[in-house]
Length: 459
Image 1 (cartoon, rainbow, N blue to C red):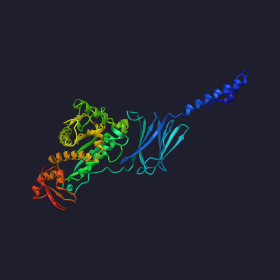
Image 2 (image 1 turned 180 degrees about the vertical axis):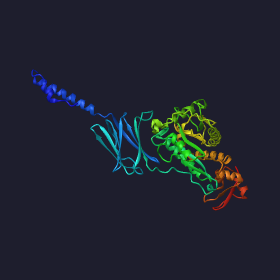
Image 3 (image 1 turned 90 degrees about the horizontal axis):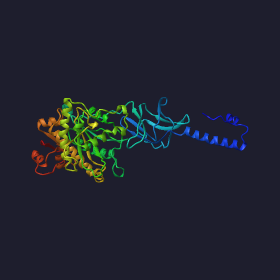
Image 4 (image 1 turned 45 degrees about the horizontal axis):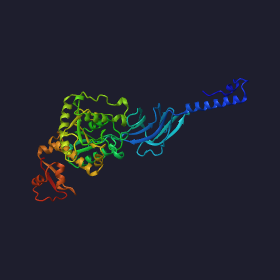
């Protein structure tokens, strides 16, 4: 309430000396200034504004110094989306936001009603919006998350069917999930190294290697630097009708001396967790949605998993067998943290009908392993080891209706030589020996030429 100076002056007794009257008025003026300052002080500063583009939406994150109430408003002609933050102010610039490829043409700010911060998103396309406040956690403070979903979302990638697929010889679909992303950097290593960056690099190398093998179709769940919720990672794999879901990660632990790669499968009960370390890592990975930014009422809450139907039993058996083969191959290029497939309640693995594995490629918190994990040659070796394990299992147990199942039934696999191919590379690709390829094709030397067709023997 503003001070009524005329009333105050009129109520000063006439007996008060002039100098005392002036001192009283000066004191009141100072107090009034303090009150005005308090009433206009911001409840929260917006310290940073960050933006990521995902295939189907754009995410804007406001980093706040404290919690703040907000309201939103959608306007058209022209299209705009407005976010008002009560008693807040902007302490950063909006000019450097990467708006290219997003539905946002410009972001403006202003002060409303003297104390509230207004952010205006000028849009070039209609969007569906979701705005929510996330509480602080171990790595971040209060955040307002603004998701702008495309009204006509980019189509999810579908498996590309080969000619053989049309004849009942479909490709085997491998859903490769690089962990974390966007708002969630994952574990942090020396020099600011981020898990989300390393695992995307390894996942892309695995994708490239599998794509070269006839009968395999690898698909990345996350293709760039943006966050996908744990549930949506599973849902994407199921939408692709994947034959395998493999999530790529890099450990961090309290002790920097911790080292070694691990392969994990789902445990359907707390008692099924194989070690304290497995439980620690699962708890860490399961908290990703709190960091990555998922509305609390949308998060999975039942991490114990009560599904016990036949499809789950079958997928768990397949996960264990496949995990053992991958672990064996990884052991040839990296130190292992454990010599067996471990079990824990990883939320991202809770698909009842898709064999699912989580691979921790090493401890990014260990300086020595962090250095190796960033080396392209080492990433290639890790990807090759994972690929060999996957390939070996599906060659032995190809899903019905796939090209590999057809080849196994007819006992024939053919490959047409391309420029740059070598016998050793082809042998590794198909999990056979150079000698067996030469014997099967009547070759006396290791010389092959483009356009030549070779019959690959059974592994």
